[in-house]
Length: 439
Image (cartoon, rainbow, N blue to C red):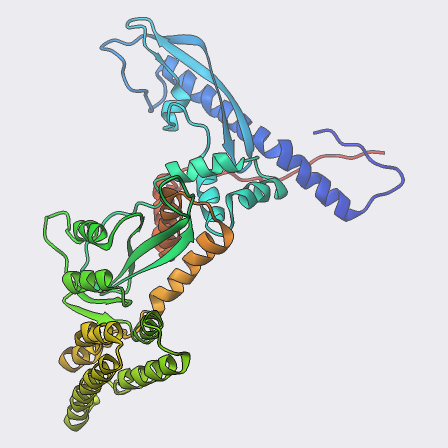
């Protein structure tokens, strides 16, 4: 290392920034390349002399290895771009060539980046656009990654594909959100991402997937396949919650033992349905407020075992009263000419108090509104609506699946730990830095 000193003095901050810039541009990559050269020498000598425990895969019955030029490769890392030049061997018996270092470190043949850089790109892309991601890498001094390259890496990554679960699902949530997709000659720019998430009985989040351009019927077939374990046995879904979309509500009723229509969506969708039938604003508000009051059936705050039988009887009577009020509201709306709004209430009425009936049978509290999945959808909407537009359907679904995988922080870390082979086999320490300075 060579340094020069300015005799007129300089600031500590400038010194820190200069050292950081020097190591970011050359220092770290030079150290990495030096370590790789040392490993290459040790592995190659071991292959030729037969003194090492590690051996390359045999190429023939009696291999006779000898030096045969060099293998050169460039790949990107978070430390910078590495220029690798390592030994190539050739078997004199069969003529097959091999690169010991590549086999020792288990590289793909045409590797252009490290897995840790792929993870960094996937994490950053979840929070900001591809264009900003590229600029972010330049700003913090990492290796340049053009936005087209970052997009290709994300689309080729398998980090969004989690393994099917093995546990039964306590609760299953599903919802959808719109986004601006890339239009073409046959369709407009209105797209929709649909999401399904499960929560196991142990409280673990299990993303079932994200889809764009598929119907709920097609999505249901994929969810059923994930609900089948390795032994071919179907896993149980105890409870499903969804918004008021009929196809989605029917899917939940088919997949789950018990299904619940979201109360918040129910009241909101009633106002929208009446608007389609030309109802006035005041009339819509009155009907929605009345519906919300009918649906307000609260469960006792105490533990199930401590609730008296009289209170449970009162709850059953309250449910029956509310169901009767729903029928009367539907009849009134139909009498005023709002047949679609009346049908909206009648079709959903049998699934509006599932949470209360389920609690009366089992004592298990289940959601009556999909607020949890709504929070997830808001985060997804922030990324694919506010930060990006002009998506392809595959691109929007891909980023959404990565966002879902990251909800399970432990599972996300475990995936990358396995992919990057972080097995505690490398120890790199700077023991000391010594030297002498003289004027």
